[in-house]
Image (cartoon, rainbow, N blue to C red; front, side):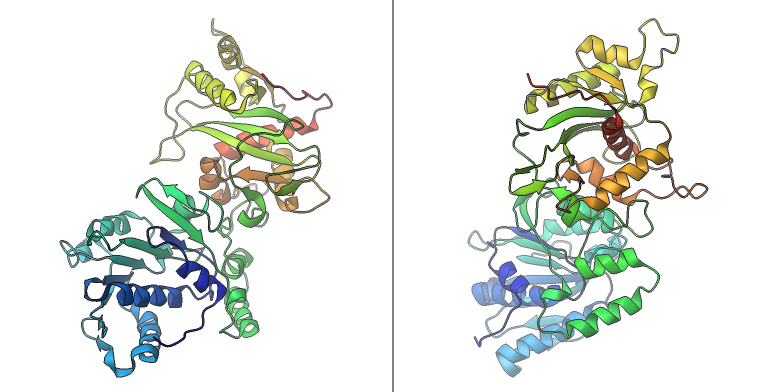
Length: 452
């Protein structure tokens, strides 16, 4: 095979073990589609006539760009020996490899693939799928001999209809290029980001101008396309201040001894209940990153929420929630103390006292967050999110382990009648708990480090 030049992203993608599934999820112009063609080519070269590759897009019209990519690449490698059937969208390579360019939009379309077997599944522009159901169904078609590793590679840009489920499933699980176990497939995956800036085969200055021209009134979408930032959500309340590359960090193993910490809790039963382990930096480096003095890290999360409805709780009582909070605190070797929503301290005429009293009887001590008006807390949260990554001012950082935060906070809408506020009809429970934790900083008295 002749020599082919790669971008750094493509080279790194090709170097990943074949047993690992991949989400190629960067901005636009990063060379993802060409990388998929390279993966298909290599797979066929390795396994010959036993290789059966399926490349999927939502519509047949969407296949045209990839068809051109494969014509260029396969023509470069095989000349006229590679045969393409345009009516069947089917490549047959000289080594016997089989590559089908397919379309999948509805469950009716799946009938074309039912009962058929493929060894490599490539899904391009997955963000066009608002839900992952159809794509998950395709995994049942992956079958091959024991010596052929079956694999799924998904590619998408941020900002599409499927932005939410893709970000939750693939992006906020681990840092870029770090393997993680994905819950639905039970497989090892790697999040492999790319941007146009790393693609030396395009006119990058010209391409940036074209992207800017396409988003004259949508700075959030432009940032997503340029940087591949999956924390962006167009028009959302935190869109301009929340950035995955600045605000997210990989899960910690422990909290440093010199850091202060506390719990931040938003109670719910029918609605979600959310508790964070909050840590404050004294101006310290931890696990390879420096956190300026006063920086806040949401280290861990306990969220009692239905998986199919992010705005509904599990019906936990205060006693049940307290038991789970205590278990979380034991894992971190901290005392179960912190701040909670002021409403938890209302007596409400019940003989059992307030919700906070019920927590206290179980051994969890909360003080009122003294949240004042919502806007004050939101502005503090926005400022600290925006300051993350700066070397001399405190910022707000959130562990990728806080999955409910990353599933909801980036997408919270503004209140249409009060634009400085979050729309409280949405799943704002993680944001509320975070806000309560930050408002503790405004107190004159410090609780001080607490360890068991």
